[in-house]
Amino acid sequence: MSTEYRNFLALSYEELEELNLAAKADRAGRVAADAVREKRLKYLTDEKRIKAVTVLFSDLEGRLHLLDYDKKFLLGSYENLTFDGSSIRGFTAQKESDLRLGIDWSAFYWVPADVFGNGKVLVFGNVIDKDGTQYSGDMRGVLKSYAEEQFQKNTYTLNAATEIEGFLFAGKDAERIYHQTHKFDFINSGGYYHVLPLDPLRQFIDTAAEVERAMGFQNEKDHPEVAPSQFEINFGYAEAVAAADQIQLYKLLCRQIANNMGYTACFLPKPVVGVNGSGMHTNVSVSRGKTNLFWDEKGQEQLSSFGWDFLDRILTRALDLCLIFNSSVNAYRRLDPHFEAPNQIRASATDRGAMIRVPIGNHRSMRTEVRAVAPDANPYLALYGIFKTGLDGEISTAAGLRDGGKFLPDNIQTAIEDFQDSAWIAKILGADVQGRYADLKQASANRCPRELGTFVKGAEVQFHHEVYNQSLWNLF
Image (cartoon, rainbow, N blue to C red; front, side, top):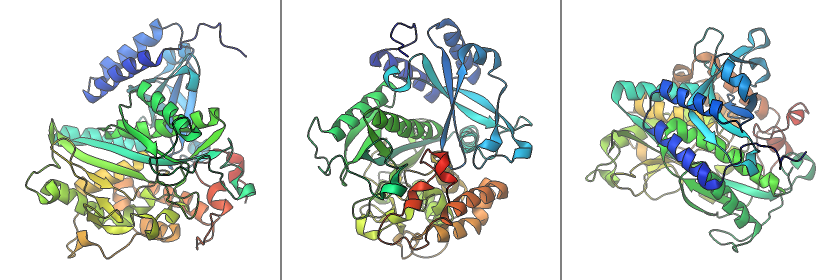
């Protein structure tokens, strides 16, 4: 049905960018939650062209869920938005299914109508348990609480930016029908940085970059990646929760734009054997006010002792965290040393095989880059694991920790065992969430051979948590 003559909100990209950057500034400036809520409620009340508010939340594996609420209903009921948690993988059992969504009004986005539809705005929510407390399985809420605790206790701001690689494949349903076709078809074979200006891959990248700019991502650079049909679109640093929100939006908009163009945007870590896989290199730092606590002009690689301690704590718990960073069967194909795989439990300023790199920086940009994170990881869980471990973990007394000698697992079964046996994971997640997450990963692992072999198996894709076709998950 045509919406051409309906009076629904459809703003220009320039208007969208202005609104989203203003909201982003409020968020970065920690404007009081009550003030932001009242501003957003007034806007929704006054703007008659909005028909619905899309509320987003993520399940335990990081799969993004969207609920559209009629605007008028939301304005009167935003404090009591209930949903059936037993239908969400990794959430409650049927006997304790009622959960609520609490709106995070600071995480409010205006969106391009040509991609998301006319008359809609987006806002992220946190999941609330029956007793009104934060739900333990909602990793966005866990990360948000931890970040706020660090700011209140130590005046720390946790900063993150990710470099997310993906593939653009021919056909809208390339992932969903992989178990039948057993192949992905490239739409381009140009290679690193090289593609013609109006090539389909370049058109996709350009479109996605424009949408990101309109949504306030503050883009930095975009380009084709090393493998055929591979892309990367980089955007600026943000506070950790905002950064994780942007990861979810980035993957959502890439998928939608690709679908609109007749393609599939794929974030499997290694969809094609024989070419480079996709990573989500996660750059992190901690600041106090305007001071980057990772910078020391006289430090080793100009990283401060605070930064080196942060890094050492993550290396100490590398095996415990591996399943969080590499959460799918397919992710362990990417940890292949023949393709710049970040599988060495060590740190380096130059070696891209190290799981943590110390890039060149200055007093503003100094950071550590956790290279061992795959693009299908739950971004809230991954960032929580990094910051919680980096700030609160213990440092191993073993000699040569930064120099390596040990490797991350080459299969998910070993990673699950390390995760299940970890007292550190039980401490930071709780035994219940630790067990539920491990059970979800074990169920997928049991459907796939332990030995990965030389080609991507149908089950690696068919039962992958980011392939949005629930009917496939029951076919075993």
